[in-house]
Length: 312
Image (cartoon, rainbow, N blue to C red):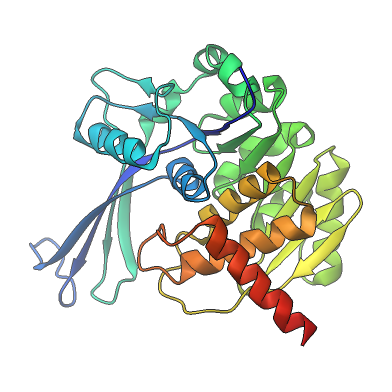
């Protein structure tokens, strides 16, 4: 198999959210708005990669239900190859159900993600030829810890890992040195490095500790403070690209997709970080989690704009 595609291994969800029109009344039916959308870190990254014109294979677990058909239809429309996904009979596709208050703040949520337990090392062993044939593999930590470790240890393609959350980041601890790229936030970087990040010096020390494991490069997301990008030769703290803010939920997924696109384009560390920041700015300006205006052209345009501003 030729290295003319990338693989994403991770989660897909049907997201169902409800918002009441007025202050929520518990134990009663509240008039309001219910929205459904497709989500999941792995699916969102693959969606963004497709918009960035990276040929993408998505390996995930799907039930035999309506959400699975919706996900399949969406992937087909985007050109994402779902032929290697696991279909689990009689199982429910991962679903995330949440309620907010009338101002949009989270009140409660229920996540049904048991289906990911079927993405075992034994199943991934059957997909090893696909994984090893890719130019790169992006993995999220929604899959079991032993499966994260299997990919890190057995996959010969460069592995990019999205830590997803503080609790799930622990799944990467034993295989940090087997990864090519890690994208944690400040808290996750502190957890995995063992360094309490309180200032710029400790931030750089944490990046160094992560690289000492054998990791090739790390991009520590700092929210409004930008990103710290580091490899074994270069360290750079880059600010965010300012812009209109409509929805921050998809910024991390867009950033990771842009890192994959940058690797596809053989870009260096700083250019990769700048592409990630540009993609995050585009995601931030969109009303939905995935901004359909994301493309190689729009990412390059933002990077060029800020390059010109820096020269002025």
